[in-house]
Length: 275
Image 1 (tube, rainbow, N blue to C red):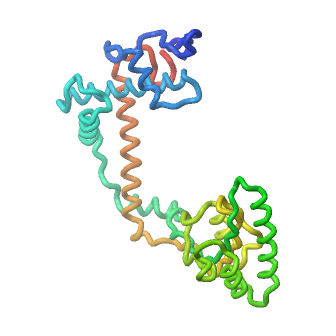
Image 2: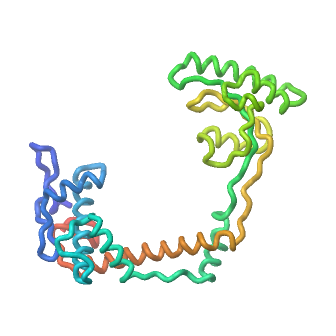
């Protein structure tokens, strides 16, 4: 981008060296700078390029929409009227038919691992609350957790012992029901807890688990792995996905066509470099 941008040492900002134009219409540098806030990047130079690219594409879409009579030439890019015009433009120029059942079935067969029910687990836990920033409380909780874990491991009936200890020692409201959380699936609990539950399978998790809430002892009463889903159950989801994927591909091709047929100065959108 050396021909597009240069550094303003005094202001420590990135300034455009060459005007950015679309079919003879210049995009003011001030507009590009204002747009930069919506394009976070590792350097101001990259943010400025992304902002200029976005505004050039917006101008191309506006010109195409005006040509179709979908909006006025002075409509503001990213305004509600502009977005509506672009939506109509895309719908008219890039109508994507629904995929065939054969295409959906092919995708299903090639991606069966993606179509499974979520695993479930019936879980009990004992919470020893300790603030993450209180190391003394954490150390005390670790000591207590080790003692409780030993009692469960040495018990002739670990599940009953675990439930009794939960009633006596857990600082979670589930203590009243022996630590029972009922059925949980992925996303129901915090990440370290979830990982321990679904890594364990059935039985006592052999080590205490630390989370932002404190230390947890975990007992998995029952674990149900995710099961394969039938095609009829997911066919609608597959159809929507394939149609959206085709729409995105068509949109990309359409934008490339607009860029290729336009006279753009100061920035090259076809190869991603400054002009």
